[in-house]
Length: 206
Image (cartoon, rainbow, N blue to C red; front, side, top):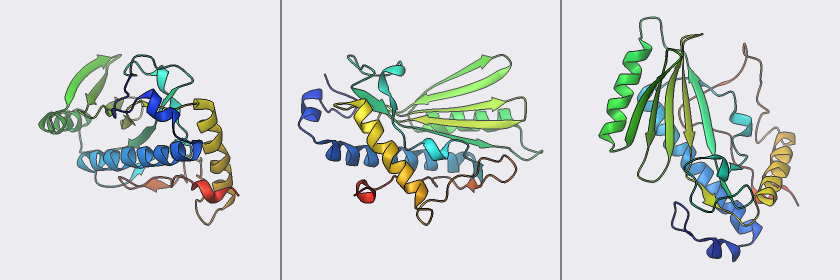
């Protein structure tokens, strides 16, 4: 069975954990690059990034309804991204969502719009199986932007997760490479579209 990149489970079995880690890095960067491009069309300025510190951690692929057939909690993963933006008082959330819907449709993406509890959710799936959502938060007049990569095969999800977590911790200790994210809502750092936490190098651990 192939994942959304056309890679089979047998092909992944031939790769070392080092090789699979480097593949994961490439896929993380591809998601962040595309998400940044999409964000900039919505708002080419500052976004809050509440989960930026953990976005390098792969998520369990089988938890997504879009996972390929045969995906389990042990053999697949994906990456996600989450940003929030508070439009100016003279900007209407619904106008931004409508314009974004038009932009995504112009890209040829498959889109849907839902109303849930008085909130509007715009979803899109790309031809490459990336998924994006723009939703309004009526409690604080913010827009929430989410993105998921396609689901990928891995020989051992837990092993990849441990390798990433160990290097994330080492990266946190090397504050010159990555300043640990400030989680205070008042002083939290803002991020430009496409700005993201660097994926920790395999070699950061001896």
